[in-house]
Image (tube, rainbow, N blue to C red):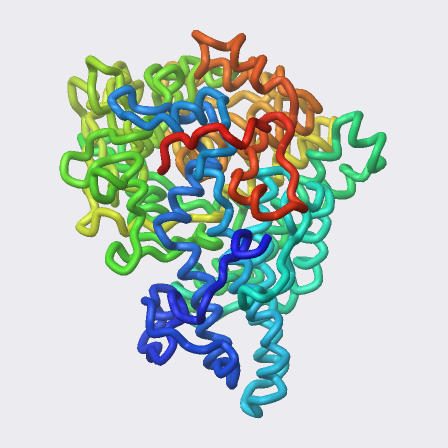
Length: 613
């Protein structure tokens, strides 16, 4: 793995050496500085903090942001390639022709991030000895921070490739032998969970300002990653074949997932109560009760007005950023770093162009986004959004009626407003909320939308999914249903309005989802509505397939909607669980004799290289 899994680095690039941190934002938006010889670098806590800053800077680079989408979304039923775009590699990816020669499977970026984290973990104890002003109580939160960021990168890798090297050693120079073999998916998940469990209670609880509390690893974000890892491992080991190998450990992991989710939810409840006590007043403060639903930022509907607005949740979560619901989001300022995968320069953006807001390389899948879901009470939805769902208008921009093209607009607008009109701009006509016309306010800095790794609804839906696998009794299933309904209701206020004559089909009814399979289907549908474009959908589908131990049900229920014209071919290509994981980039295989290729995608090494990104 010499010079490939983690390339030689000098402490420049992202390390902010010699740059003063003048505000709370500087740490998360640091710019490159001059090179430093590493042997002379590790002297005091400032050096350590600079390398931690590098960890975050690596995460927000545009190449990482593009990779989040390609690995977490592009293969899913959410998106397809714009027919007007020439991009052979994306065609191959979306048609299940995954070629190891394509550099979209280059994992170097993630291992560079892991290397920064490992440098912190290796050299932190040295600085503890050298710097008398640096105490163990200062070091432990930094150790937790670096451990969590390393775990998060490994988690992206293992969900994408299945088997990857789990690296805990830092890499310094060309003379160092750095050939590391892959660990199995089980081994990587075990290591992630073990590492996070060891530091979860050492992580920082409060940095003292919102940008750090949302933009850096906190105790809540460590628990969020842990919940995700437990849910993934439980689902992986739930199939009959896995039970035969690893024993029936899924139940314990689902329980651990729920415990981690409850921890995060309770911490967010405590924070909200503390805020009310501090800023609203102390009258009755001792008796304040905050329900799970109360934790959600509401959307308001005003039936007595000609103006209906959804600015509550959308504006706070995606417009302003760092909302009360945020747990961990990457801080993008649109200048030093920006979400150019969404609306950057025309040649670089993935979803929308900067000036025209028209669709670019990747568009929402027409098969499931061009029509509305007439009845939300179904286990096999043919569309994603019902007509009353604000998230439909918040997620997409209807680009062309003739081409039926939907661009992703979630990161483009700072707020969405709706006023009564005779037509809808999104193409989904006959909206039951009095046929609303959509208005948007676009960003003054077009690519400054933060990338959200974890937020409250993600935690809530993880809990509901784990509950659907653990419990068959009505009480627990109703609890899981209520979690989903609260999230759905927030974005579908008209569905629950007293004057809605279609409430029976617009609102969720427990009777439809009163089984484990029903709650599981409901959670997957709600996760799709809630997180379109946030890098989660493909991993949700892979987790579902691993839980079933086969791919056919996942293809028929979900991918089949996107691949209606060639479903047989797609089914044949994705016939095994291994086919859901990406190939190892051939350059890595050639440089490291300890790596092996995913057998599903193994091809002759002389195959010519396809289009680059």
